[in-house]
Image (tube, rainbow, N blue to C red; front, side):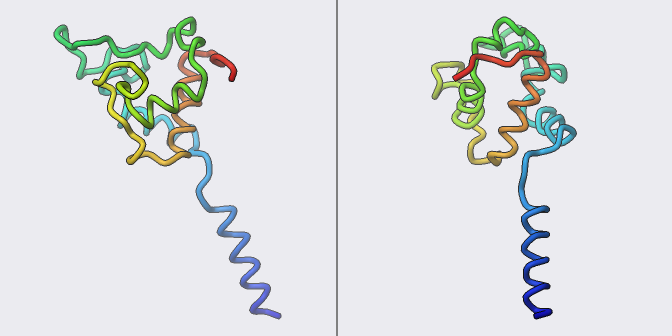
Length: 122
């Protein structure tokens, strides 16, 4: 009986502590590490890697009018598969083999905070 209780308690603890959505602070760190080099710390597309001879301008995530044209699925697809897979810039690398699904979901929420918009539904 004690063994069953310990197993059940361990299972509950694993579920509670298992992977879940990344907290906002973690999403901010993910953005700073993976995105800010091109998109800038505040998401305006003015990161330190962007120079005058940069072939494209990185998206300005604070532009609500433009970000509202994108669904969350659109953003996820670009993050996972890279810009070229979505007929966007080949400069945007695919992060699908690097980031977890939870990381990507957290980044989408972070981008929605930056634009203060909900995006296209559907």
